[in-house]
Picture 1 (cartoon, rainbow, N blue to C red):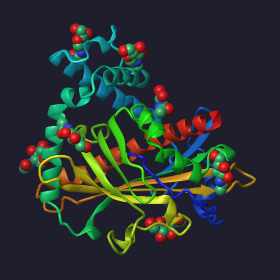
Picture 2 (tube, rainbow, N blue to C red; picture 1 turned 120 degrees about the vertical axis):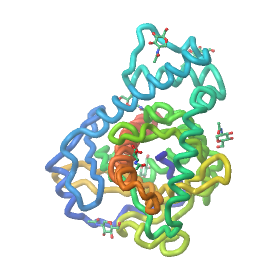
Picture 3 (tube, rainbow, N blue to C red; picture 1 turned 45 degrees about the vertical axis):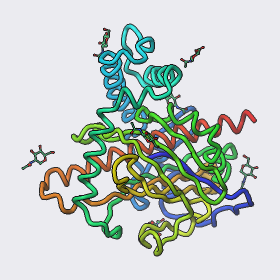
Length: 332
Ligand SMILES: *[C@@H]1O[C@H](CO)[C@@H](O)[C@H](O)[C@H]1NC(C)=O
Ligand SMILES: *[C@@H]1O[C@H](CO)[C@@H](O)[C@H](O)[C@H]1NC(C)=O
Ligand SMILES: *[C@@H]1O[C@H](CO)[C@@H](O)[C@H](O)[C@H]1NC(C)=O
Ligand SMILES: *[C@@H]1O[C@H](CO)[C@@H](O)[C@H](O)[C@H]1NC(C)=O
Ligand SMILES: *[C@@H]1O[C@H](CO)[C@@H](O)[C@H](O)[C@H]1NC(C)=O
Ligand SMILES: *[C@@H]1O[C@H](CO)[C@@H](O)[C@H](O)[C@H]1NC(C)=O
Ligand SMILES: CC(=O)N[C@H]1CO[C@H](CO)[C@@H](O)[C@@H]1O
């Protein structure tokens, strides 16, 4: 998933002061702290706040996998070989430096180094699409709710506006997640956005391995629930529609199959006596359910562990991008 929210620049009011049960629980069980900011992670809006760290373990394992994959491809092709360090370091920080170096050295470096991965991913997603119902009401979500307690330093509107600026967000994306290789906003108009994305997910909690996928989101718009997308995909009213976007994920090859829908929303969470103000970021992808795959083992792996991988991936980038946005807004 990639974070991409756009908002019209007119004033958007505070979210209604609807304090749900899970928000008051948030003050009790803070889950993880990064750069002094507390984050609560939930994988559904009725589940308890996760009590074991999500971001660091996922990021570390994903970085290890991405490092080894890139090193192997560099060794095989010689492309960007100046970027390898000796001794080899597989930490997130070293992986981000390696990716920065590759991006700096060659324009199409990741496409050349990971060409086999893109082909394998195209084959995988074509199969999922072909072996699934096109009835979107039967599709399945991967999603995360991350509540980020920035106080006055970041609100829903300013975060949404930051993600709208390609000069800010495009540059941050490569370091927002080990599995990101390219993110480019290609249309920043106020009513519609589009993006080119090359990223992977999977293989940390699931057995399929990372699916490094080259795709576009050609039309990223305010959701029309019950119209172009199913009504049950809608969120509680406390998520303002103007701070939500949804759009198809389209393979950048072949017939251009739509293999999912990306849905992002952000809202303000008011301060209480127990906790500072927060933004809550909802990120989801709705996938075809692979319901015509007769291999039930494979199908179950997709519906449970693979989908869990992407939800964890989303937590990593929400934490990293919100910290980056708050730091850059503070510096203005
Ligand atoms: C890539 O080559 C370097 C230098 O020969 C070596 O140290 C490293 O282990 C290799 N990496 C992989 C993943 O094969
Ligand atoms: C990018 O390349 C320039 C010169 O070509 C160099 O000065 C800079 O350090 C490089 N940056 C990274 C992140 O490798
Ligand atoms: C959100 O923060 C910006 C500063 O980044 C500020 O100008 C704006 O008034 C804030 N909006 C709300 C609704 O608090
Ligand atoms: C990746 O997708 C872009 C469109 O976003 C396309 O221009 C490019 O050729 C694709 N590259 C590969 C290797 O599939
Ligand atoms: C959870 O989300 C659903 C829609 O996805 C919404 O109808 C419901 O009100 C939400 N519940 C809470 C506690 O926010
Ligand atoms: C089902 O899928 C799993 C995982 O891809 C694979 O290992 C297994 O061989 C498949 N079983 C059959 C009967 O095709
Ligand atoms: C964009 C960004 O700030 N990324 C950070 C994500 O977190 C890791 C540490 O785990 C940093 O190295 C990145 O700079």
